Image (tube, rainbow, N blue to C red; front, top):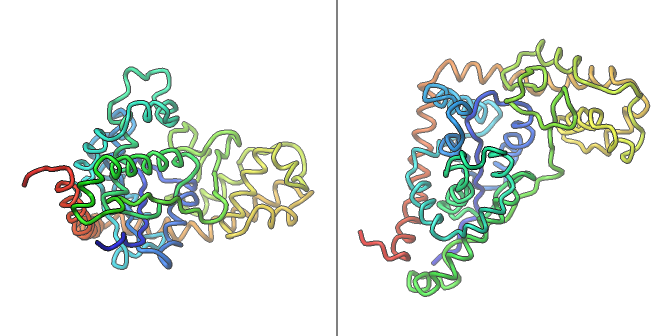
Length: 348
C-alpha cells in the first residue's frame, strides 16, 4: 500500500466572535500553508457542542458561527477550490472513528489532559462526556484523512501527543490485521506538529496576563475580525499599558505583559519577530506604538472584515462551499474508513 500523502489538517471552533487571536494563531498560518501543503481546513462544529448550550448558543447561533468561520477562512485568503473547506458534522467518518478511538484510548491518558481540567473547572462532575472525550474526536479528525502534519499552538500540543499515542496503540493492537490489509508498518501515520515560526499568543487588550477571548465581557479586550477601521483604532488607543517607556531589551520585556502583547501583535502583523521590532520602539512612548499598531492592523484586517461582511450576506454561497468541501472530504475519508472497518473485523 502507498504511504500517506503529506497532508495538513486543522480546524477552528464555530463559537462566535472570531478575533485577532484566532487570526494570528490559526487562520493566517492556514493561508500561508496553502503554498506548500495539501490542506484540509475544518469548521469543527461537533467540538463546539461539547460545552454547555450557553457557550455554543443553540442551533441558530451554531449555524451562524459556522458560516462566520467559513467566511473568515475565505476572506483571509484560503482557496476552497485548491484545498478543502468543510464543516465536521457533514462527514460521518469523524464520529465513527471517534467511537473506535474511545475504545483505543485509555482513561488514564484522558485524565492527564490539562485542557479538560481548565474548561471544566470546579464543575468537573457536571461537564459533558463529550468535553472529556474531546481529544479522541480531535484524533479522529486528523486520522480520518491519515493527515501527516498538524499546525498546533501551545494549548493543543498535548492533544496531538495523544493523537500519536492513539495511532500507535491502534497500529500495535491491530498489527496482524494491518499487515493483512497491506499495511505492515501500521495503518495510521503518527502526525507531526507543524511549527511555522514563533507562535503568536495574543493576550487581552485590557489585561496582558489573560488570553484574548470572546468570553471576556469587555468588547474592548479584543479585536474582532468583523470590527471596522474606526473600531480597531479605538480599541488599540484604549489598550491597557503601564506608565513607563517601552523596554529596550527582551529581558525587560518579559516583565512587562502589556508591552510584550502589543509588540508581539505588531511583529506578527508585520511578519517579523519581536526581536526585530523591539529596537524600533525601545525607549519610546506607548502612544507611538499604538498609532503604528492601529495603522498596520487596519491595513491587514479591515479588508478581511469587509470581505467577511460581503460573504455573510450570501449564506447560500457559503453553504455551497461547505457542501462541496464536505463531499471532497468524504471522498478521502471513505476509503480510510473502509480499511479501518476491515482491520477491526466489522462486517459490511
